[in-house]
Length: 360
Ligand code: DP6
Image 1 (cartoon, protein in one colour):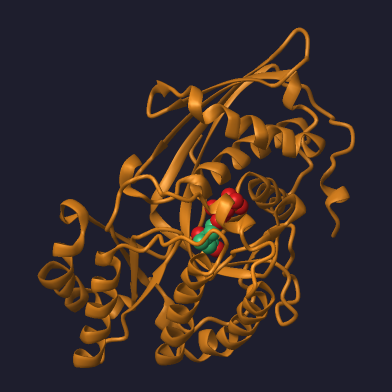
Image 2 (image 1 turned 120 degrees about the vertical axis):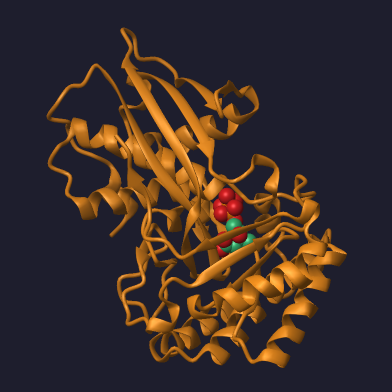
């Protein structure tokens, strides 16, 4: 499949106005996307758990214009008009215009809200961009009712990717792969797919408790971080490592070997941050409490043999991943030993979810 195939042919239907609402989850990568080529093509494949509770709900209201000209839209976040979000959406529209030629025919009012606190340090670009991509696809389906579910989801992921790479992995559940990998036949750099191989029951309802260490704005955005992989002395080795780790994860997901799972996942998280710490300019997104929590998790695992592990995204917060059956003991551990390291004692309990949903 090439990107040309996402350029639609003539539309069969006309629609004047309406509105659609989609709810789309966040996701947490096990194998990390860090580094990209032109047009949001990832430098290596990544795989993530789709989350369940952390999500964005987006309503797209649209009305046909008399004179199509420029992109015409307003954006409201949690009920308030947000001018500062508009450049990001305009850039998204510019990137997807060739694939959604109807964009300039409509005036759009976009309303979005998140289930997680805005200032939690949890990236909302994955859930927000995927929800918006799904609303646009819903409009496209009105214009061309022949699109089937598979084409719909694939193009939604393709469009979401152009908004934010990780957003491509927020359409489907529960394990999602984005980026071409030699051992995952249908994988693609253009869009994400549901992980097609066997997954052991140990990973069913896998828990992710997000320990909010720092709710502030990050000093370095992911987009800048990705860019710093150009000319990074370890870039090629890192891309090889991610490919290798994904290859190793395939039999682990099948056998349910949690000790092997932990080794891959934690190493990925630390490798991601090692890239940040060795780029030019270098930067550190972890905070002292990130390291306190990591050490506590290691002590807890050693003492109890409960297979809980951590991963990190591009920030200071820690995602504590563990099997459903150990939920009670791990939550007890969090309350007794980890809450002190969380800003305002704040953490969010989430688990693996099954992907985006249409609400109206
Ligand atoms: C560390 O998807 O936020 O979370 O494509 O520039 O929007 P852009 O970047 P983004 O990067 C996510 C990086 C990560 C790893 C991951 O989710 O795979």
